[in-house]
Length: 202
Image 1 (tube, rainbow, N blue to C red):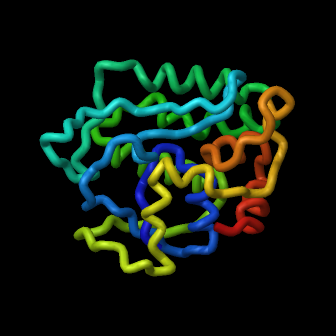
Image 2: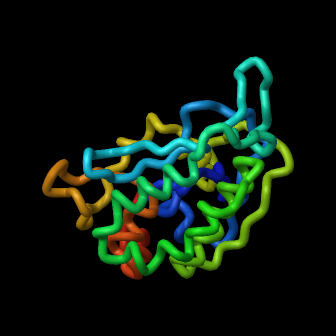
Image 3: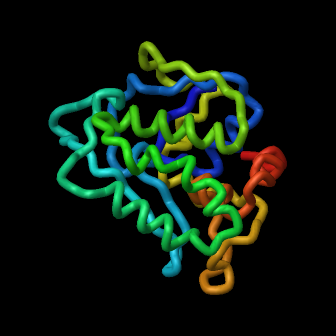
């Protein structure tokens, strides 16, 4: 299947790939701002919170996704880790998984692609999924193939998915929020996350 590498992918991405044995990551496309390429949505005490990885990118200089650099001006890793801790430290499985994810916050990444591939690696390991991956070698326009899920990178599609509800930390304050980062499911459902993903459809 064909998929964009994203920062702590949302649940829809994992619903798409849960039955796949191989993922081809699209890296030859032109980078676009305001997508999940560098963004992840979590459930904070104040509701949905979007965390963005700062990148060095200008619209004038078209760049391939694989060439986009992470900006070093913002201490984003420390801020994101604090946000995850604040949002999920009261969840049932936060302490069980957070140490396995620490390389994301302790490693200095030069390229956004390297960061996103590391996220995928650590998440599939936490979920105990065996999925082989490779990078695209050129860009092809979508032919509406049943294996092409590159459209999931678009943030405008986020609310189109109405997945089954599960218990979230702040449900009583703000209600259920669908299709957040896979971390929301992992921290709240733990090992049951796999069963949940397998029971959902796009």
